[in-house]
Length: 597
Image (cartoon, rainbow, N blue to C red; front, side, top):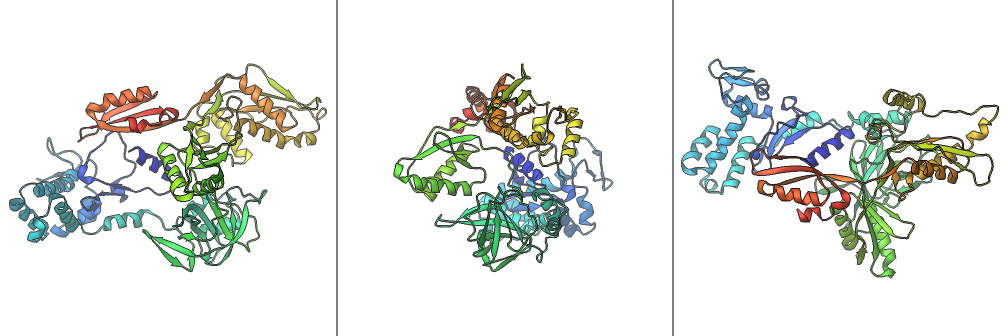
């Protein structure tokens, strides 16, 4: 359930339409504490069991009744198969109140009970019960099929009763927009350029004859692991094999065009399930595998035609609802194989979207991932696929953040090294309650213009002004003061990127800037303000979900307590002997936690 919630949250963040397939209908249970966000009445829910070949929606099940009895319309009947709907057999009408005590809802009576009947009859006496129910369902079985084992026999009966997976196809076609219909939402959410530009308007049309723009999001290693095929979506235009294109990396901007390369596209493929079909061109709206352009692409990229001369912005990098906080230092056992290891690091960095690689000041080569299993997968590919060398791994550590819990007790200042009259003064204090969460959840975004940012902070935090210019024109040259603005910003960002406690990221803390001159001065001043505001370290934690038998719950509590875990809820799973325990556990204490459980 935890992974399902995470996937749904990510889909909502990406503004994708959400549909639901309730799988394992053969193990149906209800959880009254979980509110339904979608409804079968809206045709965006299907019920399924992959083990028994079951897949149906309310409408498809109602059509089965309509085809058998032929006295009503299936679509109208489906509207009464969900919610507080009861069927009164005396009046032959549906009502919202139960006609008598113990009456079942219409979904139970017309959908679940027939399913349970099929299961119970097959599991029971096949020779006496099965022929009658098969005749009732108009399903024919040979003598050999009747002698099958229970599970394959149920799967065979369900496949013939429900037919093909048309319900799932209808679910997709009715609720998932086509690329052309969804182009506007896609571009607004991922394109970083102005929406009123000619290029943005062209992208929203998803026109195969428009300017070429491709957003790549994944790199797939070739069979020999020497190169990668870049996977992306053609947003506009048509991509041709052998075409010269301009590749814009994640660091590309109009001000800094260094992260830009011109390369020639190799072969093109369209993925068809587990196979790939080679094509000569791919028009807008399709996903494509591209050969020959992987060298400058690290994670994601924006591909455009070389001939386009106007200002171009990139598509934003991928966003994830989890962060890479587990740090692993690696080095080759044989020092002469260091170049091979570095090549392997570059390749796993391309393969894993959430992986980050870097070199520390000590010279260590470090990888950051989301967790223990994630790093195990990375190390497997490093050793067996990309580098094929023996690699020594240090004990995993965790990234921390630095913050403050009080306002600086003094106004901290720093003077420029030239001993002039230039002085920079700062104080630090915790952010208002909820503001850090709003920034992380992108309720407020740094890309907003000043007016919009000011309105947000004034409404949310009662801030009068974000920055206050307290200088007098007669005493300070405004133009000269503006020349140091960029240095102040860089010094401030340097300080917040590497805090004074352990050179970790500073979180949940604003710093108020006064006058200043150079980057190191701004950094020293920010450090002073931070240290005078009761600094603290913040550690990351996991939200875990453990499913265990009832007699093992106490043992789970013991293991969590030893790892500084905090249990939030534990509840039985209806219809089973299992319990679900939800808890928080610090990431630094979660190493080997799954093995202990």
